[in-house]
Amino acid sequence: EENTMLRNKLDDYLALEAELSALREKQKELEKQVSYKEEGKQDYIVSQVVARSPDRFNDVIVIDRGTKDGVEPNMAVITHEGLIGRVESATDSMANVQLLTSSRDENLAKAPAIAAEVEKRNAFGFIEGYDREKNALVLTMVDSDVKLKKGDTVVTYDQSEIYPPNLLIGTVEEVGKGKYAVDQTAYVK
Image (tube, rainbow, N blue to C red; front, side, top):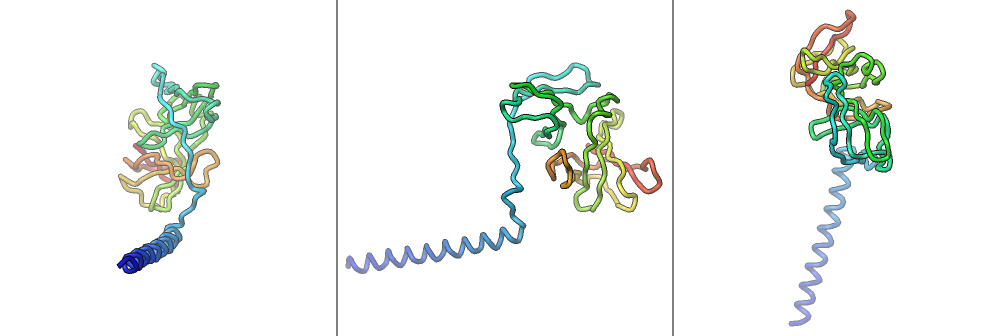
């Protein structure tokens, strides 16, 4: 009777070991199918807003993390809704964040344009400012052959030197003509 119990436990153990091995193989197969890459993971520094400029044209917030926490100028700043700005300057314990909604000409001139792409449309362009009347970011220089539609998702371009790839910027709200005959402009919420 004791031998039978031991044999049953051994059989159960061998069955579990075989199932674990099969699951590991399946995991490897699935990781290959979705091009799983460990290096694609992003590190985040979580912070809170401790101040905001009262001047809506300035659109700067102050966060409670600084250089001692790893915050550096030009880092992307995101919320659960997507990209909201970039670190303009940092001290040991705080940082100023220039929001994408800034409309002062001198801030836009010194803020780098954001290389962006429209998912599933093979479209590329640049976020180059904020239109206060339309209450939307301005996506410029999109090829006029691309059929943009309201609701299309706009993310940071994967070849950007400043921003990490595929950060949500927003969705297309409206499409208009560009500055040149071969491009179009989109307004992104």
